[in-house]
Structures are given as structure tokens and as C-alpha cells.
Length: 215
Image 1: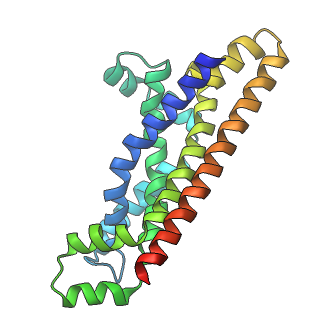
Image 2: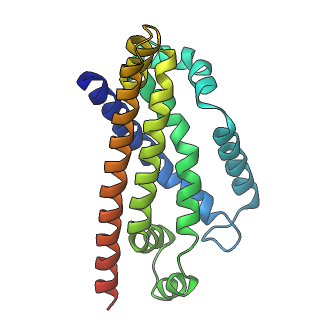
């Protein structure tokens, strides 16, 4: 049980870190290529939006199976804890891109206009103004994504993905031991609840800090 819990946390946090590194710049591009963005482009925005929509529409279990050859080529195996990081990461990226796009699009235009008047470059506006202004909301998006990834990691147990999902299937369902299944569910609920509580506290702290800086 302890090993399975550690595997779940390992898969989830690794997938979150890798996917966020990819999704943050892509989400920024999607946001800035919209009408009214820093570099609007209907073609680029349309293509990226369609890719994100397709990525979000694929059920996770089917994605895992579809990615078996790619995962095996990348990791050396298509099952196990490390292997599941690949589909978990790919599944999280479109979800994160959409969250980041919406968060960055809410930055007041007056702030951007003032930065442009001061001669700030587009890259500086994105990183030092848009990202900085929305740190609490980006952190909240991280928490939301992590909770979703934990849910997906449990589903990955059906195809030998390791973690609590695999533990519940192998030692619980296949052996008709419903106590094991119940324990796995309880641990996942506890993990999600703790992450949500910590995330809420962190977001509130960052919001108060941002308000103090503004004043």
C-alpha cells in the first residue's frame, strides 16, 4: 500500500512538472494569437485550438493504449510506473493549455498598454507582467491539474500502470478483496483532499501578497 501510494505521487508530480514546462509557453502562444493578443494570428490560433480540442477529447485509457508503441520506444516498456508518466503528461498538456490561455487572457489591457508605452518587449510583457500578475491563478491551475492527474493515474492501473489503481486491481479486484479496493479509494480521497487544502492555502497567501504589493 505504501509503495503504491509513493508510485502514485511519483507519477503524478513528474507528469505535472513535465507537462507544465511544455504547456506554459504553448498556453501563452494560444492566448497571444487570439484577437487582441500581442501577436494575433488566426491561422496559428485555429491550428493550436484544434490540436488542444482533439487532445482533450481522447479518453485517457484509449490514449494509453494508443501511445504504447511511442512509450515503449521512449522508456523501453509500455507498462509500469515510469511508462505511465508519458501518457499522463500528454493527457495533461491540452488541459493545462486551456487553463493557462483563459488565465492570461484576463490580464487587463490597460496594464499591457502601459508596459508597451514604457517600451517593454512582448516577451517581457508575457513573462514579467502577465505571468507575474496571474501567479496565484496559475498556482491554482497547477493544483487542479494535479488532482486530475491523480485520477488518471488510478485509471492507468487497469493497464498495469502501477500506483494505487494497479494495487486496487491486482490485490483487490482480481482477488475479490473489497477491503483493498476501499482502502485504495480512501487513500486517493485523502491525497486529493490534502492537495486541495494546501493549494487553497497557497493561493490565498499569494493573493494577499499580490494585494499588498499593489497597495
